[in-house]
Image (cartoon, rainbow, N blue to C red):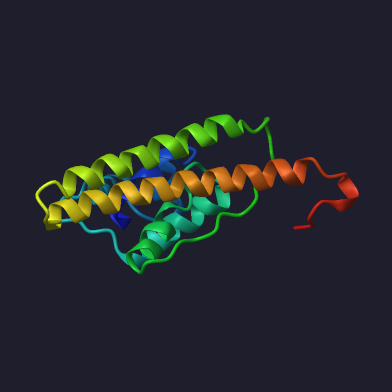
Length: 161
């Protein structure tokens, strides 16, 4: 996933969506909509992207770390997701299922890309996307494991903060 796709996904899952974020970052909603659409006449700048990312992280919305992960992934790294409070029981089996599915997608894409013995630019882009999605599913599973671990401790022993 590239940073632009990450921002689009984050905006889509932010409570109130595009309209609320555009107001929070001080942009005209229609201009922001065009920037999100990828229209060549409108470009979302780095500072605006960082503000969107900060808002999503603050709200703990779904996919809130995708932008920072996409930026980190381009440099070969990743961002460790924080432990979240559990509002509902964590389903670790669902998390494992997601990890297995995403790793299967990585395996399938790798085999297909290497079938001719050459990894083209398009192959590399597709593999990078699949690997980023697998990394995200692993991070979500890790986050769920940590949350379930923390929730199982007596209140006096839980992490503060």
